[in-house]
Length: 134
Image (cartoon, rainbow, N blue to C red; front, side, top):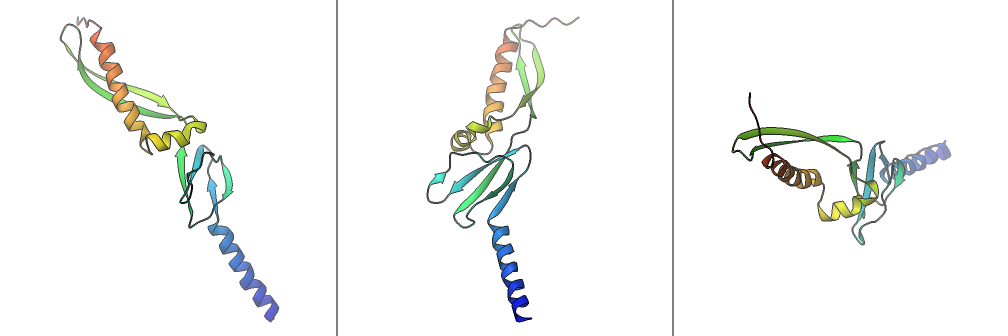
């Protein structure tokens, strides 16, 4: 009886240790590992079950599925008419470049890239057009 109780306690502790040292990356997501000693690791973890050291490493997940991003712009044309325009950009990050994207731009990279660049592209294209209203 005492051996069964010890086995149960040991099994519970082993399960708890296994549960705290693993993480799951869901399909369509990628994970980066931030290490307190070495910084951001270069490897990108794909979907599945992975191990990490809980107090030293932290997990950063990115959604790598195709997503849409809406950009709204109110701009003028060449003949000084005002145009309210909205476009939808379909995007997904390149999984191999996620460590560089995270270091340079952070988790909100979509807003930083698409809002500024998208608005400038729309304004440039619309400024070259003549709008005819019938």
